[in-house]
Length: 272
Ligand SMILES: Cc1cc2nc3c(=O)[nH]c(=O)nc-3n(C[C@H](O)[C@H](O)[C@H](O)COP(=O)(O)OP(=O)(O)OC[C@H]3O[C@@H](n4cnc5c(N)ncnc54)[C@H](O)[C@@H]3O)c2cc1C
Image 1 (cartoon, helix red, strand yellow):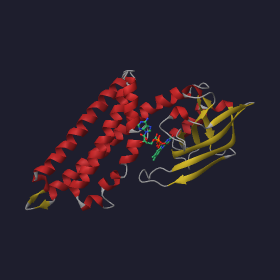
Image 2: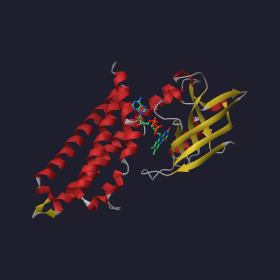
Image 3: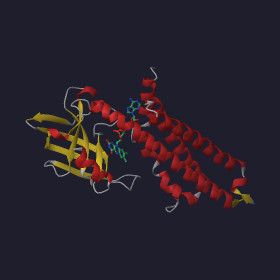
């Protein structure tokens, strides 16, 4: 299965999607309800997923399904190809992330061969959590990059724009905004680099990764807000990079584990 699926995806010839979230909720992954019932050499899948990135155009879907009892111990991961009978999709419109499509998926008696099981049966939850760690690090790096663009554009504007006889950058209130953005970005980047190094050494600092994602999305939210404030009307107009980034703020704070869930996960890992 790896040989069939991974090379064309890495080559950009095929697209893959990860389908975990359901209409009944995304935060409580262990409560998912899409079922895969064993029938001979197949699983028969029934249920629905939503907010799935590349949900419309993907060729391969890694789908979290319930193969066992309640809770985290009853979850497996199945590879489902787009052309399986009974598998349909509808598009969703969203605030940002326009570069990818997002969809709701429906599985109605979809037969999937048992060879499509990824990993061991009922062991899917651990795989989902492992994947989240790298997704969260990636989203953090993205948020730091977006924040840097906001700072860069705010500084450029503050240097050029004049109000009340001097440059915006010469008003102390504006200078402090820019310094604060730089402070928050720098601390987030430093923590990101430390954790990236520790992960490369073989560590899995789950709590810190979760909290770093919160730190990064709060930094992004602050920088997008303050950059637009510094730029005034110009920042609000389509064509401004800050306006574009502003539309990406919320999805970063919700997707890949929301800020609330990240804090909760970290607290549990800390033994609180
Ligand atoms: C653009 C986009 C793309 C996405 N792509 C994918 C994808 O490719 N694959 C995929 O599987 N999912 C995807 N998601 C789904 C995303 O992971 C979920 O939206 C997220 O996990 C939250 O789930 P939910 O929206 O169902 O909110 P819910 O779980 O219903 O939670 C609603 C709110 O309540 C808060 N909350 C929930 N429980 C608690 C609690 N115990 N304590 C405090 N607060 C709580 C949450 O933080 C959230 O703010 C995507 C979402 C978006 C917006």
